[in-house]
Length: 84
Ligand code: FES
Image 1 (cartoon, rainbow, N blue to C red):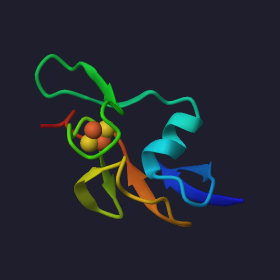
Image 2 (cartoon, rainbow, N blue to C red; image 1 turned 120 degrees about the horizontal axis):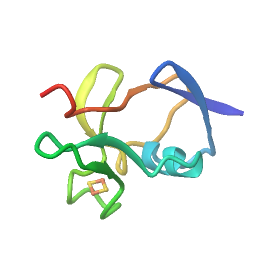
Image 3 (cartoon, rainbow, N blue to C red; image 1 turned 90 degrees about the vertical axis):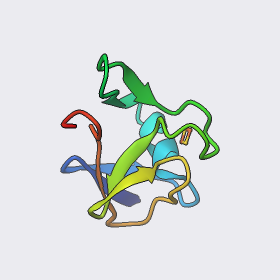
Image 4 (cartoon, protein in one colour; image 1 turned 30 degrees about the vertical axis):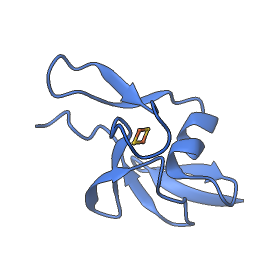
């Protein structure tokens, strides 16, 4: 099975899924919080418009998880926005 690494843990995905789809399929509905108010965010629009789903992918911050196809070995860091 194909896997990405999310916050240091392996996460299986189905070929063709986005990072967001893999996260949601694993049961995660939110993976970061807003800078103001620390409100939970995950997928909202699912089409790259709202920026709610931001993650860091292979060190590149500010990636929209709903647009990034999952690839084996990809490293994803969630909680983006919490430290800003
Ligand atoms: S869910 Fe809106 S940009 Fe990804």
